[in-house]
Length: 534
Image (cartoon, rainbow, N blue to C red; front, top):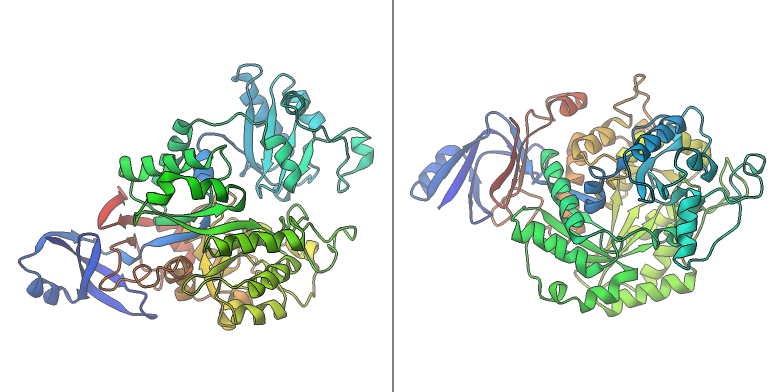
C-alpha cells in the first residue's frame, strides 16, 4: 500500500520546467509519476493515503552538501554571537552569562565576526578578563579558524600540562597589546586550547543532534553531508549519538558523514561504523584541511593579501604531509574532501588528487573553492571532483573580501556561474553553524548575489548570478551527485527515494525575496512527513 501526492506543482528536476501532476510512493520510494488520473487508475487498489499538497510546490528533498550538524545543534545550547554587531555587545553577552554561571565553570560561545562591527578591533584576553575574571572563557570566530580566550582559560591549559605560548599575534596592534599574549589562537594553535575544554557527554551530543535535525526539517532539509566526528573527544561516542537519534529515536534524516583524517584510524576500528548498513546514515570521504579562512587571513593565496602584504595565508600541512594523508585515504578506499579556500591551497590539493586518483565510482571534493585560478578550473574539468560551494558566503563576505584579496585580480572569486559555465559539478551547502542553515537563503543569495539584510540590495559580481533552476539544482541533483547518489536521490523519478521539500509558493513564479517570506510548507523523508507548517 502507498501514497499519492498531488494538488500542487511538482517539479521533478529532470530538466528545467518539467512538472508532473501526481506522484505515487511505496515503502519509501517513488513508484510512478504522471497525471492524477493515471495514478488513480494504475494504483487504485494500492493507494491507502492521498496527500494534499494544498497548492504548494514540491521538489526533490533539499540536501545541504556541507555542514556541521552537531555544531548547528550546539547553537541552541551555547551562547551564539553570530548576530552581534559590536565587540561591546559580545562582551555584554559574556558578562550576562557569567552572572548566571557558577564560578570556575566554562563559558563557550561561537560566531563572533568583526566584519559586522563598526569598530573592527578584536576582543583580547584583557577585555575578557574584565568581564569574566573567575570563569574560563573561549570565544570562537564564526569561521572556526580563530578563537580568543581569557587568563583563566590559559591557566586551565597549563593545569592540563599544555604548552604555554607567549607570542603576540603579528596581525594585531602591538601598541594595544604590549608584549603579553593577547589570548588569540589561529588554525592548529587552537588545539592547545580545544584539548583542554571539558569533554561533552553523549547525552549532550544527542540533544544537539535532536535540536539540529528538528530545525533542519523546518528549513526544508531532508539530509546533510556533515563533518562532526573529530570534535567531541571520541569518534565512537559521536557515531553512537548519530545512531541513537536517527535510528533508535527514529528521527529520519539522511546524514552523510565525512571522516576527519585525525580520527580515521579510530573510525576504521569502530564496530558500529563497520557494521552499519543504513539508507539514513552513511560514511563518506576523508576530510582534510588545506588552509584557513579569508576572515582570519589564513586562506592560502598565491600572492600576499592586499590589506596585509606581510602574509599570503597558511598551509595547514606541508606538501609531504598532504601527500601522505591522501595516500592513506586511497589505501582505505576513500575519496577525499578537502577544505581549500585560497587559490594556492586549491593548486596544492589538485596536485595530489592528480598524483593519487580516487577509485572508480567515487568522487573527491574541493570544499569552498572561493578563490580559484583559471588554471585550477581547467584542471578540475579533467578530474572526478565536486566543488562544495556556500552561496551565502557572498552575503557575509562582501564587500570586505575584495579589500582582502584585491580588486582587479585575475582570480575567480566566489565565481559560481563561471564554474557551471566551465562544466564543473557543484553542490550547495551552508557550512552551518558558520552560516544560516536555510537552503532557501542559499538559493536566494545564489540568484541575487546580494544580502537579504542589505537595505541597498547591492549586487556583487552580477555576472556570477545563477538561474533559479541552477540554484535549486545545487541542493537537489548537486548534493546527490556529490555523495554518489545520483541514481537514487535528487530527482522525483521512479526508483528514487521518496524525499520531498514542499515550498508554500512557486519560486519560478515569484521573486526570491518572496521565497524567504513564505518559506517551507512540508518536509518529507522516506515517505514520512517530518515537518508541516501550521
